[in-house]
Length: 297
Image (cartoon, rainbow, N blue to C red; front, side, top):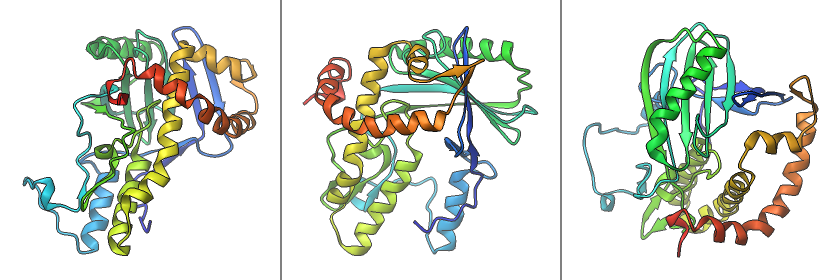
């Protein structure tokens, strides 16, 4: 995509998954994910992309509004009124070691998960709930209590963060000449609620179709359709399982809290999952439509 990495982008291959009473450690041979900063801070993804845009002649108009009819690409974030997830937490400075901790349990994150991420003295602690959004404040308090018992948090200069996650299977990527990218098009992961990589990809594809005079609708649908459906099946399986730790433990072998051969386990799951996803999709849609209105016809 010709994007330079002029922002902090830290790889993590070691991940711990916890509940109130258990813990599992995964250590992969390759990065499981990369941590980036967001917002008006030094080293953030936003600041890095802005710098690259300006260097390429882009003019940015801050503190001004335009209507959708005046633009080629709509990248506003969530447009729909219905959300499947809400997150709330804090970012902070700390002397803690780098770490990536996932935490499950309804009191920490109803039907979702909480997490503690630390890299190079910068931390983020959040809870993500996928139902009963009114519990998010209490869940965050329980999450904070849990991590404070486990670690010397050493939180400085904390700031509140939060947001919502929206998802759509309608596939309305393009209306007339307007191209919708990221969550404005409902492009999101229904299981975890993360979508930065896909949002950037959708922006790239939208720009590419303008330059090459091609159909963004066709290109985006081809690229994202199977991914969105797979994430819906993942959400379905997660909710059927109920207890995420039990589900994880049933899929892996472990010794003293450390997962054996995590790369091999997930390679096997990845190969089989494609077939399972296609088979389970009709059942998953029918089941989740009862709770998520945006999946209804």
